[in-house]
Length: 200
Image 1 (cartoon, rainbow, N blue to C red):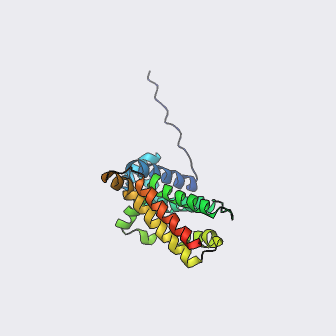
Image 2: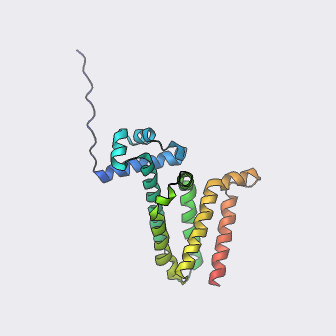
Image 3: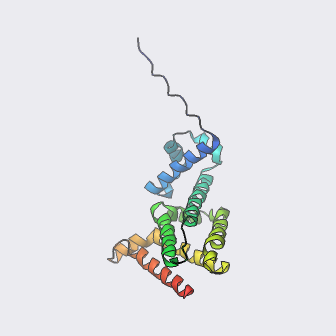
Protein backbone atom coordinates (compact mmCIF):
# COMPACT_ATOMS: atom_id res chain seq x y z
CA UNK A 1 0.00 0.00 0.00
CA UNK A 2 1.49 3.30 -1.09
CA UNK A 3 1.35 6.29 1.14
CA UNK A 4 0.73 9.52 -0.71
CA UNK A 5 2.60 12.56 0.42
CA UNK A 6 0.28 15.12 1.89
CA UNK A 7 0.52 18.48 0.18
CA UNK A 8 2.16 21.08 2.36
CA UNK A 9 -0.37 23.51 3.82
CA UNK A 10 -0.76 26.78 1.94
CA UNK A 11 0.96 29.69 3.56
CA UNK A 12 -1.60 32.34 4.32
CA UNK A 13 -0.33 35.91 4.14
CA UNK A 14 -2.04 39.22 4.56
CA UNK A 15 -2.23 41.36 1.39
CA UNK A 16 0.62 43.52 2.71
CA UNK A 17 2.77 40.46 3.44
CA UNK A 18 2.02 39.03 0.00
CA UNK A 19 3.02 42.25 -1.74
CA UNK A 20 6.18 42.49 0.34
CA UNK A 21 7.08 38.86 -0.44
CA UNK A 22 6.65 39.46 -4.17
CA UNK A 23 8.70 42.66 -4.08
CA UNK A 24 11.47 40.97 -2.07
CA UNK A 25 11.61 38.18 -4.64
CA UNK A 26 11.69 40.74 -7.46
CA UNK A 27 14.51 42.63 -5.74
CA UNK A 28 16.56 39.45 -5.37
CA UNK A 29 16.13 38.74 -9.09
CA UNK A 30 17.05 42.32 -9.92
CA UNK A 31 20.26 42.21 -7.91
CA UNK A 32 21.29 38.74 -9.12
CA UNK A 33 20.26 38.89 -12.78
CA UNK A 34 19.29 42.45 -13.73
CA UNK A 35 15.96 44.04 -14.70
CA UNK A 36 15.48 41.75 -17.71
CA UNK A 37 14.77 38.99 -15.17
CA UNK A 38 11.73 40.83 -13.82
CA UNK A 39 9.26 38.83 -15.87
CA UNK A 40 5.93 37.70 -14.48
CA UNK A 41 6.74 33.97 -14.42
CA UNK A 42 10.20 34.52 -12.94
CA UNK A 43 8.98 36.83 -10.18
CA UNK A 44 6.10 34.49 -9.32
CA UNK A 45 8.42 31.48 -9.17
CA UNK A 46 10.96 33.32 -7.01
CA UNK A 47 8.17 34.42 -4.65
CA UNK A 48 6.71 30.89 -4.50
CA UNK A 49 3.31 32.00 -5.77
CA UNK A 50 1.21 31.60 -8.90
CA UNK A 51 1.34 34.12 -11.73
CA UNK A 52 -2.24 35.01 -10.91
CA UNK A 53 -1.24 35.99 -7.37
CA UNK A 54 1.27 38.54 -8.69
CA UNK A 55 -1.38 39.93 -11.04
CA UNK A 56 -3.95 40.01 -8.25
CA UNK A 57 -1.72 42.20 -6.06
CA UNK A 58 -0.13 44.40 -8.73
CA UNK A 59 -2.16 44.12 -11.95
CA UNK A 60 0.89 43.76 -14.23
CA UNK A 61 4.62 43.10 -14.16
CA UNK A 62 5.16 46.77 -15.04
CA UNK A 63 3.43 47.68 -11.79
CA UNK A 64 5.73 45.28 -9.91
CA UNK A 65 8.77 47.06 -11.38
CA UNK A 66 7.34 50.47 -10.46
CA UNK A 67 6.47 49.35 -6.92
CA UNK A 68 9.94 47.88 -6.48
CA UNK A 69 11.59 51.12 -7.56
CA UNK A 70 9.33 53.06 -5.19
CA UNK A 71 10.23 50.75 -2.32
CA UNK A 72 13.94 51.10 -3.05
CA UNK A 73 13.61 54.89 -3.19
CA UNK A 74 11.70 54.85 0.10
CA UNK A 75 14.43 52.74 1.73
CA UNK A 76 17.08 55.13 0.40
CA UNK A 77 15.24 58.19 1.75
CA UNK A 78 14.84 56.51 5.14
CA UNK A 79 18.57 55.73 5.25
CA UNK A 80 19.52 59.31 4.32
CA UNK A 81 17.06 60.83 6.79
CA UNK A 82 18.54 58.64 9.55
CA UNK A 83 22.01 60.15 9.09
CA UNK A 84 22.85 62.53 11.90
CA UNK A 85 24.12 65.98 10.87
CA UNK A 86 26.26 67.21 13.77
CA UNK A 87 26.89 70.95 13.67
CA UNK A 88 30.60 70.40 14.25
CA UNK A 89 31.06 67.80 11.48
CA UNK A 90 28.94 68.72 8.42
CA UNK A 91 31.56 67.35 6.00
CA UNK A 92 31.35 63.89 7.58
CA UNK A 93 27.56 63.97 7.32
CA UNK A 94 27.73 64.97 3.65
CA UNK A 95 30.18 62.15 2.95
CA UNK A 96 27.91 59.66 4.74
CA UNK A 97 24.86 60.84 2.78
CA UNK A 98 26.64 60.53 -0.56
CA UNK A 99 28.02 57.10 0.35
CA UNK A 100 24.50 55.94 1.21
CA UNK A 101 23.20 57.27 -2.11
CA UNK A 102 25.96 55.70 -4.21
CA UNK A 103 25.71 52.39 -2.34
CA UNK A 104 21.99 52.22 -3.12
CA UNK A 105 22.53 52.69 -6.85
CA UNK A 106 25.50 50.34 -7.05
CA UNK A 107 24.85 47.42 -4.75
CA UNK A 108 21.09 46.91 -4.96
CA UNK A 109 20.57 47.21 -8.69
CA UNK A 110 18.64 50.48 -8.41
CA UNK A 111 20.62 52.09 -11.23
CA UNK A 112 19.78 49.25 -13.59
CA UNK A 113 16.12 49.34 -12.64
CA UNK A 114 16.01 53.14 -13.03
CA UNK A 115 17.53 52.82 -16.51
CA UNK A 116 15.10 50.05 -17.39
CA UNK A 117 12.13 52.16 -16.29
CA UNK A 118 13.47 55.11 -18.27
CA UNK A 119 13.89 53.01 -21.42
CA UNK A 120 10.36 51.66 -21.07
CA UNK A 121 8.94 55.16 -20.38
CA UNK A 122 7.77 54.19 -16.89
CA UNK A 123 9.66 56.85 -14.92
CA UNK A 124 6.86 59.36 -15.49
CA UNK A 125 4.74 57.29 -13.09
CA UNK A 126 7.26 57.50 -10.25
CA UNK A 127 5.70 60.40 -8.37
CA UNK A 128 7.49 59.15 -5.25
CA UNK A 129 10.75 60.49 -6.72
CA UNK A 130 9.49 64.08 -6.56
CA UNK A 131 8.22 63.56 -3.02
CA UNK A 132 11.51 61.96 -1.97
CA UNK A 133 13.56 64.83 -3.38
CA UNK A 134 11.37 67.39 -1.64
CA UNK A 135 11.53 65.54 1.67
CA UNK A 136 15.32 65.23 1.68
CA UNK A 137 15.77 68.80 0.41
CA UNK A 138 13.41 70.38 2.93
CA UNK A 139 14.02 68.24 6.01
CA UNK A 140 17.67 67.32 5.67
CA UNK A 141 19.74 69.57 3.44
CA UNK A 142 17.86 72.81 4.14
CA UNK A 143 18.61 72.30 7.86
CA UNK A 144 22.28 72.85 7.05
CA UNK A 145 21.55 76.34 5.71
CA UNK A 146 21.29 75.46 2.01
CA UNK A 147 18.21 77.02 0.30
CA UNK A 148 15.59 74.45 -0.72
CA UNK A 149 15.88 75.17 -4.45
CA UNK A 150 19.64 74.69 -4.35
CA UNK A 151 19.19 71.56 -2.23
CA UNK A 152 16.90 70.08 -4.89
CA UNK A 153 19.50 70.83 -7.57
CA UNK A 154 22.20 69.20 -5.46
CA UNK A 155 20.04 66.08 -5.20
CA UNK A 156 19.43 66.14 -8.96
CA UNK A 157 23.17 66.33 -9.61
CA UNK A 158 24.04 63.68 -7.02
CA UNK A 159 21.41 61.17 -8.16
CA UNK A 160 22.31 61.65 -11.84
CA UNK A 161 25.96 60.95 -11.06
CA UNK A 162 25.13 58.02 -8.77
CA UNK A 163 23.01 56.39 -11.48
CA UNK A 164 25.81 56.88 -14.02
CA UNK A 165 28.41 55.39 -11.70
CA UNK A 166 26.06 52.53 -10.81
CA UNK A 167 25.51 51.69 -14.48
CA UNK A 168 28.89 52.31 -16.08
CA UNK A 169 31.47 53.21 -13.42
CA UNK A 170 33.16 49.84 -12.84
CA UNK A 171 33.07 48.82 -16.51
CA UNK A 172 34.45 52.12 -17.84
CA UNK A 173 37.09 52.27 -15.12
CA UNK A 174 38.28 48.76 -16.01
CA UNK A 175 38.24 49.50 -19.76
CA UNK A 176 40.76 52.31 -19.32
CA UNK A 177 42.96 50.30 -16.98
CA UNK A 178 41.78 51.76 -13.68
CA UNK A 179 40.47 49.92 -10.61
CA UNK A 180 36.69 49.26 -10.86
CA UNK A 181 35.96 51.65 -7.98
CA UNK A 182 37.88 54.59 -9.50
CA UNK A 183 34.85 56.26 -11.15
CA UNK A 184 33.03 56.26 -7.83
CA UNK A 185 36.04 57.68 -5.99
CA UNK A 186 36.49 60.50 -8.49
CA UNK A 187 32.79 61.35 -8.55
CA UNK A 188 32.53 61.47 -4.76
CA UNK A 189 35.66 63.63 -4.53
CA UNK A 190 34.17 66.06 -7.05
CA UNK A 191 30.79 66.22 -5.29
CA UNK A 192 32.32 66.69 -1.84
CA UNK A 193 34.61 69.45 -3.14
CA UNK A 194 31.61 71.17 -4.72
CA UNK A 195 29.59 70.93 -1.52
CA UNK A 196 32.54 72.27 0.44
CA UNK A 197 32.79 75.26 -1.88
CA UNK A 198 29.13 76.09 -1.29
CA UNK A 199 29.57 76.21 2.47
CA UNK A 200 32.87 78.12 2.36
